Length: 282
Length: 274
Image 1 (spheres, each protein chain N blue to C red):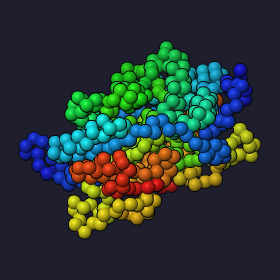
Image 2 (tube, chains in turn brown, green):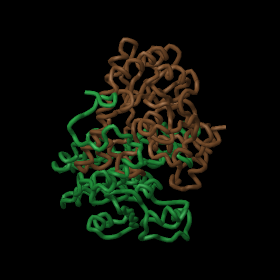
Image 3 (cartoon, chains in turn orange, brown):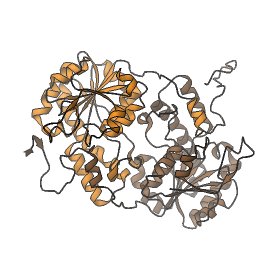
Image 4 (cartoon, each protein chain N blue to C red):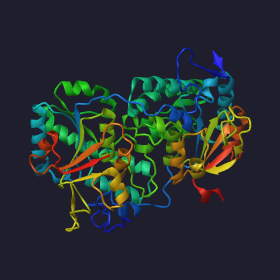
């Protein structure tokens, strides 16, 4: 759509543009479905560090991950994001008890992720770690081209506007996994590695069930429709991934074996790869 | 200090401690909770972009007069602006350039802010102030001091707006932002002021046979597969799961008296219930 009608007067007039149209019309919306969209930051890779799975384990787990990031950044353009962990769960527990609406929970939870971001920034500061906040998203190339390591929180900035949840329990569907994925997707990142404390996605929680089976390769739809009670990633991340335009697969790796981080960034399959949809799995 | 290898918070009965928030069992164990209302006496009102603002003084001024009268009679409200024609133009330009949805949402966010600033200038002498999302924790102060908070209808998603299964235009625009704000506040009502009497079976500006729909439900509208609607589809989807806002009302602001009637609880226009 939107062929140029005339540029004779120097202005960009758009033929069959959206003027006077209801943007709600299903027919009109379908005409706007482009197969591909443009990439904002070519070559970017997103590293999502788990809050509960890595940060809450303290020095023992965090320092090897920090070392892996220092090694990896020599060969890769990285953004490092982080979740909230135990303090996020505590925030939700108190918020639930007080009867805060979902938009209130979403507004306050980012505060504990800022703790984790600031800790990682401190640890990575000798190597160029800087805090990366949403108002500086468009400055990203300044940071990357100067060899810095931008470190950000994961929670997307929906705040009071967090939609009613699709899942039970009235907790925000959108957590740090979703926020970091969406940031990676809008920038057109090449890959997203989710650093957790399990080898990948299992059919049940491997910390609780010894006979849990690991799934090496899967797709968003299969995980959403499957009967896994628990997953190491947010379900809304899977729903977002299934509508991907650019970033069509993510990998969940075990960060307690930090070699996995460098391997995964180099394109090796060391954890579970989740594809956007069935067709991409082939 | 550590338990199961993790630094943990002791001494508090925290049902989520050391749990995966993705667990269906965990989510199910906390469902059905009740929530508090944040500002239950406040109306959240959308001033249509294309339908009102783009018509200029002829449409805007009588609506502002009616709103100011209501405020002086003790009705509390927050005004939220739509984008309109300029938003459509920048979406067209962005689509032409194959920009991603998150970028289109960022572009679309600027236009309703312009409209909010215009309304603030028009309403300054009556207490109109621009309230940005970062200042929403001061809304009680603004309202108690007799001000009219005016804001953009867009939710703050911007670069974090999700790609949709359908088109590339952001699904959450100003209707969604207004609805979600009302839902968060537990508002007294959510009112959409437009230039049509309400919703029709098709766009009445293009199809003279379109029939008026005075009352309907979000479920019925979603199931109807009607091509065009008067509110964004995600609003209907959110309504099916909302805790607080179970009814929205779309009224024709170009007919004097309609806004006052809606404040008085009359079902003018189209009422959509959850």
